[in-house]
Image 1 (cartoon, rainbow, N blue to C red):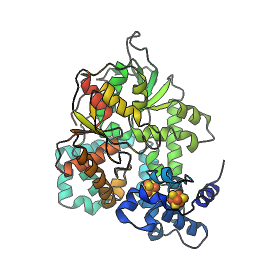
Image 2 (image 1 turned 90 degrees about the vertical axis):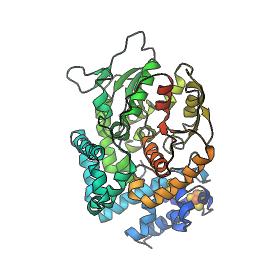
Image 3 (image 1 turned 120 degrees about the horizontal axis):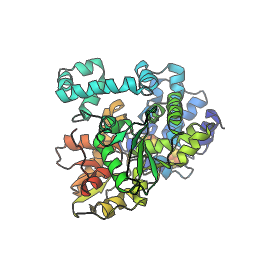
Image 4 (image 1 turned 60 degrees about the vertical axis):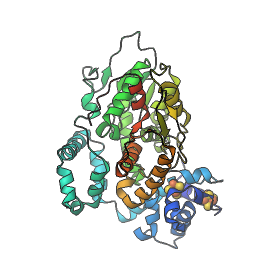
Length: 435
Ligand code: SF4
Ligand code: SF4
């Protein structure tokens, strides 16, 4: 296994300073500053490695400003992995200066512990639905508590009263004795497809449960036997912030919870979760279970495109599709969602210019860097408007929240929805859309 410093040296040495990365970096296209493009970030990291610069926050702010979208690597002849470099630089910064206490608490105490996390999110949801949080925001209380809270409150229009895990009994899930695993039982003759272990991501569970419900129902319709995984967060948020140890811990916990279960494929409708689950083998190279899990992981659009779902019951309606970075660029899953929209949904697809450019959501980037995030989003929204499509489809909750926020800000009537929600609707599968 190569060490962090060997990895960094190897990547830095491959940058020939050509500048090809300038054309596709969403951040650089907004700020037009050399330190904010891959070449500039690499130059700064080189200076830090050589001892010519320190790791102080102003110096390395461009490292934290990176969306980790990976677009620069695609355009780079040497395929320099700037995204990975930025994560390691963030990790080194925290090692030297310490991690913010709230971040450490969230990543190490809340995310691995649904018993603590869920009641807190429930309280937040209640505040949002009763309007209390909006009042607090208007009075400036949230900004006073934390600018982050203030921004987060404004990103979503509302929050669901019942999370996806709350809905499972109504969907027919029952718990076998002596286990937390919830099994959805199907008539044997219906379950002709693979045994699917369904991974519920945090965004789907807490913010977009109707998306998860639609995904589960579509899998059932395609003949899969669905078991819901008793999983925790996949680990992507701490990894993105440079807390690799917290990410590893979450990954180990998920492996402990899932690998002994009987299933063929691990499936999720969150493009970010599926991308990170496929990254487990790299994250935990010493753990054989990680490689096995990675090989059995599929994004739901990947799997549904392989299974035989019926032709659409109705046709028409124009849709455009935004490629989430973690699904399109990282997993190269681009054809399948489009095929599903057209062949299974019966939609007329209008291609989006720069469909694979980051929308600026990037996990919680829209909270940590709200101004930059909105400028990146504006470019995406302009292109969506150019299509004239009636619906925006995508395949990651973070993108739905981000583009949905932009759509509301622009006063659009155009809904922003997950591919599986649109397909479920077209096939008459009723989903509780009470948000
Ligand atoms: S495209 Fe690659 S090699 Fe060229 S400047 Fe950017 S990171 Fe360096
Ligand atoms: S990962 Fe994305 S935001 Fe970061 S330098 Fe590369 S293109 Fe720019």
